[in-house]
Each structure stands twice: as structure tokens, then as C-alpha cells.
Image (tube, rainbow, N blue to C red; front, side, top):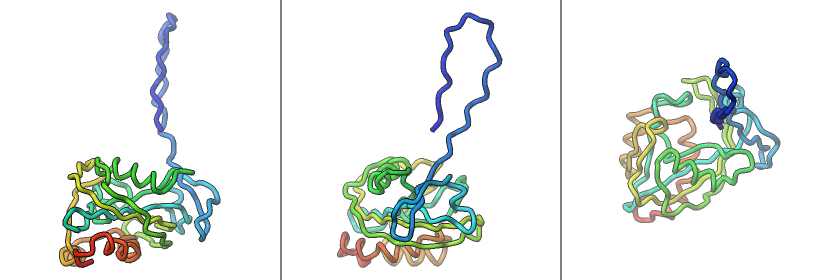
Length: 202
């Protein structure tokens, strides 16, 4: 978290200003194969090869017609820029509940709040990303829900949001690149999405 520079009331001659403080590193919660916390690590170091197992979450939201909301990640992101992925994903802060983190991140990325969000299990994976050289080694908490309000995505995070039915999703997966983790988290969350939107064909 960045800190605002303090204001001085001194009448002494002004000194050269201090350099702007560096942003505090983002810390991730490291876990074992059962999801028990084992420590913390800086975000980028946890993703460097061979990757360190850490806690993450993935959110899948459907609209009122049961269509799945996908996001294309902003092209300025350091990891997996410009590819399609699930509605929202991220990492809880150390000791932050995954559900709270998921709600926070939906707000930060999409500028809105889900009408419904519920837990949908966990999945663990180890996926190297050939494009960046980084590694996704995650104990991932899955969430499914419904979003009735239109999203207002942050352009620094999300380039585009698209609602797709099953046929449109398959066509998009053939035509466009997706995140390396998408297939794993989608396969794990899909039964819960199907329960949430039973008439949508998932």
C-alpha cells in the first residue's frame, strides 16, 4: 500500500524532497497441498519458475440469461496480458477470507457487486505460462454467482467483458487465446455453474 507524503509545518529552509516511497510488495499466502497456511511470499517471486503453491481464487458469474461472463485481461498486465479468462480471479491477502477477497476483486476489476456469490469447491494446479515464463501453482478457491448489473471494468485490469453461451464459448476458445489456468478452473466449476443456470446448457 502506498503512503501519502507527510506535511511539514517547519519554518526551516526547505530541504530536497525525499524520493517517492516505493509501493509495498504484494504478499501472497503460501499453503500446503491441503490448503493450510505455511507462510507468505512476494507475488512475483511466488510465480517464478518452478512456482510456489499459494492461495488463489477464481470467480464465474452468469447473467440473467445464464450466459457466462468472460473477461479479456488488459494488455498492460505483467502476467497473461490480452487473453480471455474467467469472470474474475486473484489472490487473497494473507489471512483474508477467499470469499471476501473474491468480492473485493470483482469490485476492483469489474466495478460492480454480484447479486449472488457462493463457494464451489477448490482445485490445485501447476501450469507454466510459456508466454511469460511465469508459473501458476495455486490452491484455487472457486466461486460461482450471478451478476445482474452491467459491469464497468477498470481498463487497467480488464480490456473487455463478454457474455457467452456454451456454443459461443467453444467458438471463442478455438479462435482466441485463453489463460493457462482457464480449462482447469472451468472444468472444476462447471457443475456448479450448471446448477446455477440449469436451462443455459452448461
